[in-house]
Image (cartoon, rainbow, N blue to C red; front, top):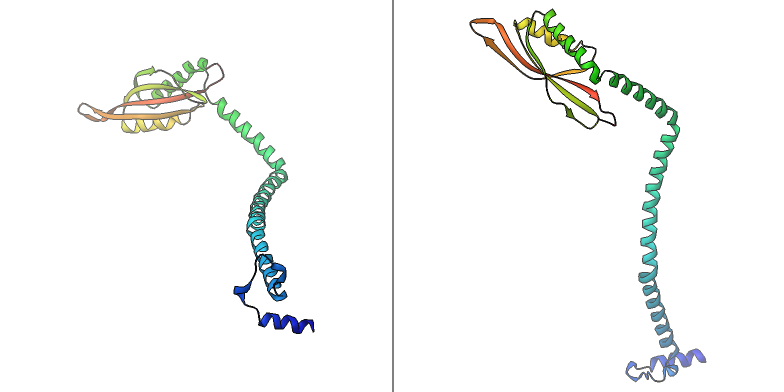
Length: 204
């Protein structure tokens, strides 16, 4: 009987006759519809204002998790190869020490100049001059240019340049010029800058 009354009241319902001051008198189906509509609105608002923020936070945490995993894998690899890294460090220190030992100290520069002179004479060159130039400080070392003027045949000059590589100390060659001297095309004049280096300690 109650169902028949409800259906009858629903058929006789006119939306224009709704009394918003007396909601309790509305037909039950209308009330249910309004409740469902309100529930849907509340759920939608809850999603956009709360659940969506949580999803954004979750996406950020997931991205952070990926970065942390990569960092962990990197550190795990480094830890697994720690002994190899230590051995490599020892080898690098030994190599660095060997290279530093090839850099002349201030007291060895005269001996180096003598070696350069002897190389020139042994290869048949006439050494006109060997002049020390101003030192130039770099980050880890000090550069000492040496201006060399010599003359001789093309082959003698080539042998001298090759012989410089055999010196016990590090010497590099720069800015060379070769000119012919007079009518003798086989007699050449050479100007070249040899640079030697010394380790820059804390006081340099």
